Length: 311
Image 1 (cartoon, rainbow, N blue to C red):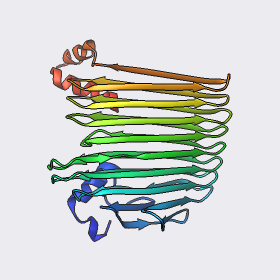
Image 2 (tube, helix red, strand yellow):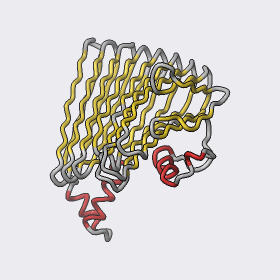
Image 3 (cartoon, helix red, strand yellow):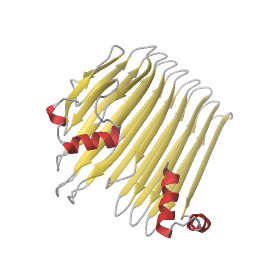
Image 4 (cartoon, one colour):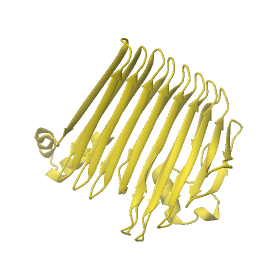
C-alpha cells in the first residue's frame, strides 16, 4: 500500500484487524477512510465503479471468474463522523469469489463515530460467493463506536452464498440486519459471532424467504454477553416451497448481561422443513472443572471456553 493516506500506523493496524491486510493486497480492492474512497485497484475480471447518485460503489464480477479476492474495508479515525455507504455487488454466472469487507473505528475523542454499510448482493445462476465481514472498535475516547450493517442477498437458480460475520471487540452499539431471497436450488449459509461487554448493545435480525424449490438456509449465531451488555437475536424464516431452513442461536451469558432470542418460522408449503434452536446459559461448571484440573485458574479456564466457543 503506497497511498500517503495509509502511512499512519493506526490505519494500517485497523486494516490488518478487519481485513488481514498487511502490505500488498491480493486481488481487487477499494479502501474507504472517513467517508471517502482513498485507494482502489480493479482486475481483468472485477470492476469497481463509484456511484453517481449516492455514496458507495458498484462491484461487477464477470461470469466464470474463478477464485478471485475482493477487499472493501472501511476505516474511521475521525470522531463525530456519521458515514453511510451503499455498495452493490453484481456476481456473474458461475463466478466464484471471496469478498472481504468490514469496518474498523478508532475513536480517541468524546463524539460518537458511526458507520452504516448497506450491501446488496445479486448472484446470477450458478454463482458462488464467500463473504467475510469483521467489525472492530478501539480508542481511548468516551465517544461511542457505532456500526449498523445491512446485508441483502438475492440468489438466482443454482447460486449460493456463505457469510461469516464477526464482532468481538470495541463496538458500543450495533444493529445488524440481513435479508435473503432464494430461488430454486440455492443455498444461504450464515455464521455470526458476537461478543459484548460493558454497556454495549447488539441487535441481530435475519429475514430469509425460501421461495424456490430445494432452496435452503442455515443460520448460526454464536455470542457471548458479559458485564452489563444486552444482545437481541431475531430470526424470521419463511418457507414458500419445498425447502429447508435451520436457525440456531447459541449464547453464553455472564455477570449481569442479558440475551433475548425471538424466533419466527413460517411454513407456507407442506414440503417446507423448518427448524429453530435456541440455547442461552452460563458456562457449565463441569467444563471449568475439567480445565482447572489441567492447571488453569478459573479465569483462564473461562477464557479458553469462550475462545473455543467463538472460534
